[in-house]
Image (cartoon, rainbow, N blue to C red):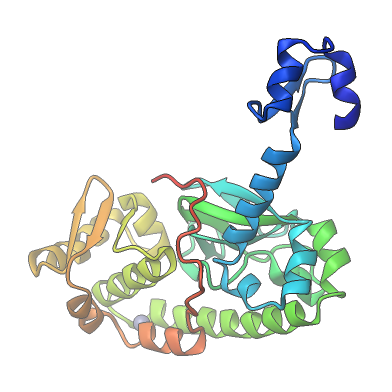
Length: 289
Ligand SMILES: [Zn+2]
């Protein structure tokens, strides 16, 4: 990656060197090492995009500029795809994820119902902040989108130098615990239709969209019910024109009506873990359904 040495291998005054000097090339493939080498302008553009994207995560956006800048050095934007598993129970945590516009479900076992949902207001892998380097939950990408990712090693090195990040993560860890308690109680005592409504609203809030993709199997897993039960719960919501659900694509048509159908857990979770709107709601990094 020694960029300054690279032009020496190019023919002096040749078309490649002229194109580089004219700013017409963003990157070079070095066949000797198989590395893709970004030229300075492209690297700067990517860093600026990463900086903007990171501000769309509430935890990162709340940090003072100096601390935010220090963390950026270890953060990289990644696209997380629906169904991707980020963490497994009992397995060392490799990365901390700060979602930008994706949503990540936390479940206790492979078949277990959901015990948490993380979007742009939070982070996944924050057990590291509490001195625990092994995950206690399965983290599963529920909505495709972008997250800022940091290695566990880098997080470990940086966390103690960032007092504002410590405060933010301890506060968020407490809110996440309260959410887990509420969801566990909800799973035990509330009707599937009310839980489904609550869950759709929570997802919509975190992906900042009224429309998102969810398979019936995924819904069943998250709610801890059979697929047929998902249909029985979603049917009345569609007939009352609160949602549409076609080929896995869910659209919330009547938010007020859906809120009235959801159990009170939706409001309680929102009170315990408020979603703070950040200045960069549309980071503009790669995202697909
Ligand atoms: Zn409930």
